[in-house]
Image 1 (cartoon, rainbow, N blue to C red):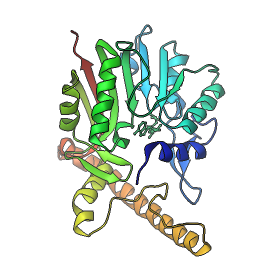
Image 2 (tube, rainbow, N blue to C red; image 1 turned 180 degrees about the vertical axis):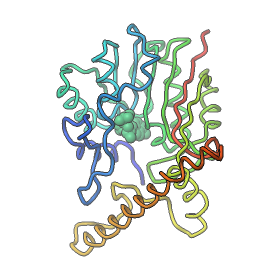
Image 3 (cartoon, protein in one colour; image 1 turned 120 degrees about the vertical axis):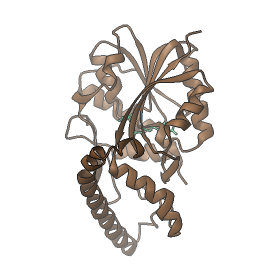
Length: 288
Ligand SMILES: C[S@@+](CC[C@H](N)C(=O)[O-])C[C@H]1O[C@@H](n2cnc3c(N)ncnc32)[C@H](O)[C@@H]1O
């Protein structure tokens, strides 16, 4: 069972303190190997073109604090919120390492946002909604986002998307842009721009989870924190775990190398719009 605050707290605890440069790591797997390298501090913030200096910005699911930190450094009023206390702590350390001593970070229960209505001009979120696997929770989050945004304000997201909604791991649900459009529309948020970045690797994950895994009687792809693993305290279980972890890493490497070759081919064949990928979507709240 995926329980978001527990899962992300565990990740926060194994995050490299002070990370955020290209050496930083978000977390490690059960063998201590890093599986996700943090984006460079200097590649943040996302959506810079939408950030006027007087904008009030909320980043939801602020993680290690990259977006909030960079915006603050560039003179924008930015607040971060996250469900995981350990990640808020990691974000604080991370930002202090970059000279930001009083970051605005608040804990979030995953739905209710502790802010008055019509407070922010921009709400950003990067790879967070894909981890809200329950549609009714997503609906509530979009409702809250709309409430705290000023009329005419923008909600800027970057998430895994797939032509059809599919759960690809216990903690990941890829949704279609239509699903985002429909849920957002019921909260006065309408899509004004989509930048689709197709990825053969993500498309393969989506196809595997939607078609191959159910046909073969397999579950969703086990997540990298070993949630689906057996008890790892016994030496034998630890060894089995190491072997499966190595096999998973090799398989991932193989598929990702294959995908690197396939991406340009998909683009040449104009198939990119049909492939799953990572989308940047801009929503605008109705101005009335
Ligand atoms: C992949 S991380 C991305 C962190 C950050 N936005 C970034 O780009 O580095 C996902 C973040 O979303 C938060 N999160 C995930 N699921 C959540 C949920 N259901 N409710 C609230 N926050 C959640 C996690 O605590 C974590 O910080």
